[in-house]
Image (cartoon, rainbow, N blue to C red; front, side, top):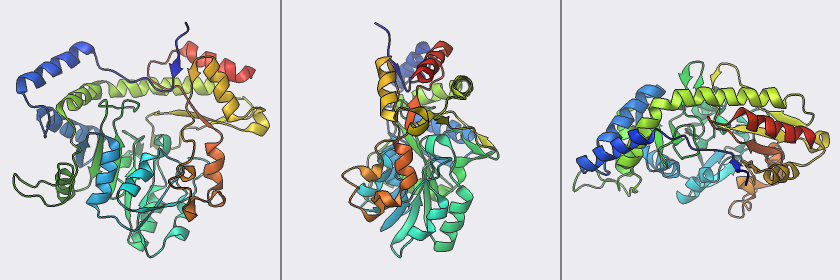
Length: 369
């Protein structure tokens, strides 16, 4: 039976190295609660990413929930409907009303030009997403936030080591959230992090992710249990040794995709933006039904029959899920670009060890159908 090709394939460190790390954890008898591997990973990630402070979490969703608690966000938050549902779920879990803003057709990021019209007296923050690792219009968003006194939290789940004009994209906004899920460029099996600008904010984050404990007998806030354990941390330290090599290979995969898919009428893909250091987290294509002659869902099924399992990422829109579609801002007339893109997108398989012949096979299927 021909093997199935999926969108992502986790990058794994050499097994022998991981076993050695597990032996050290076993000898230390320190499995969680800010252990040695955890402390080392925070330091090395901070240096590698070029950020001041990083707090590790057991997953990215808990990191996002905690970030909102850290900045005491309430009321309404302007965000994008074009993201993984965890972005908006984090607002819901904090009792915050999401207000959906349409996206840009070029980057699929929140359209900064449309944010200001959505601000009300209840608006306290903006929660944009760096979709597929492409940076948002951070300068325009910062300008709006400054004028209206709003906080900005970036969902940077896709944006590990992405840079804008040689500056880490994680240093923009009040906080940035990373995901280290197994599908990401850098992973700790499950995991996540909050990037913060100062020691005081990091201290509050670290209290909140550990039940709110400030010391053995003092609880300063109703925190949560979101700590990264030593096994995840050790895995991450090994991943960090190989991540530059993995990103370089991903860049080559993206190059071969573009070379093989160019000039197919009705099929579009994202080009690298200028002045950006990309991480090649995903390779989305967009099917224009009128020009291509088949719908996105038809193409999805054709690929699936050939054991190529693409992902309609992001579809459905968050704003079209039952939990959120009743919100006034979720009305399709308010989100024309997001709804259009959600009907066109397929993320093709993208990982460091994707063979060139698989890319050529995918391109052939797309050309012949």
